[in-house]
Image (cartoon, rainbow, N blue to C red; front, side, top):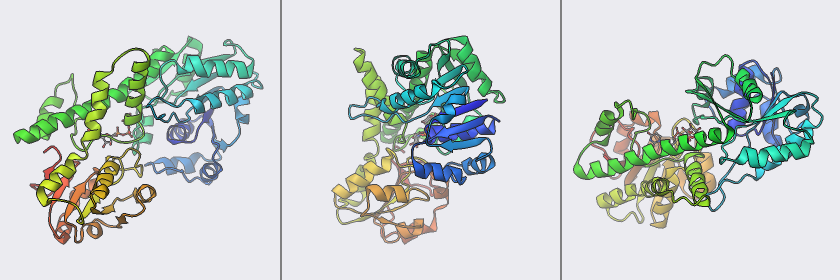
Length: 423
Ligand code: UDX
């Protein structure tokens, strides 16, 4: 199928490359010339396991990239995968969605065949019908007989996005008619997963509710963890027992410093503002964020209980990325911890296998090391913020510390008896 994907960010790039892996003829539309150059040279502009290999396999064969929308005029499906960042009030900024819809509409004017416009970005329910559809119809001068509309959310996890795309738990297709929905179904032929056919607004809400529930599981585990810690109970033992209940499931019950990333905090905030706009008081969702915002700095309380004031002390932060296997620091819990340590006059040093360049943009004045040993040497305290598997191998490096005071924010160390944020 001739597919156009608008937006070469995380979702657009991974989806576009994986669509070409499924055998489709794909054109990525990306406005950033640097990204266009990188993609043309077969170099993914983001770090994502397995993506470079697929890009090299398909680039300039059945995967093309352009800054313009010309390819839309010969496309059968156009996926809109541009960003929906948060606005200061937490609601989703839909200006990129609207701009892309107008550009797609203008190019569809020259498309002689039936085409389906599909939203893949995470958007508040109602966005496709109220913003995308009118913008495309007006700009194209065409009718819904000639253009179909649908919503097809992604559930990709950073660091495992290619695997999640090619082995999804489910494929959700929200469409206003069967013709447009059927065409999207054809795109995913070759993938074995249950396909949910539903309405457009339901599909939009499935995405938000899924992320909000996963975030709720994490904040719930953290709250239970905080209670368990006071009772001297190991929350991981507890969650093992809880997670065996098939109604609950074992995943996303890992207590720790809280969730970060470009999705959970943003999507829960957007859902809260959506609820308020519709006269609902989202008590539970507010609490999910409240627990998450308070959680990381508990680690500093524990550290201060052990070493007193952190003022003038050398504190090592191990892990800067919001989770392992990515260089992404967006809403990383490490940011809150570093900020508070600096405010309290600590000398912060840090190590992360991938995320130092991004964190240096936020904290240019802290000391970054290329190894765990470098960061721990002479430290008066250590906070573990990211679940990097390599941290499970740390042992003799702790002997380099001036004071061997360690607080785990992620259950990753193999050293026994290390105190954790909620264990
Ligand atoms: C998430 C969703 O998983 C994905 O389906 C959606 O499409 C995008 O948002 P991502 O943000 O990449 O993916 O990260 P994820 O692996 O879900 O982790 C999110 C955060 O939760 C990380 O900070 C992680 O450390 C934390 N986490 C995860 C926990 O604290 N405990 C857990 O048990 C799992």
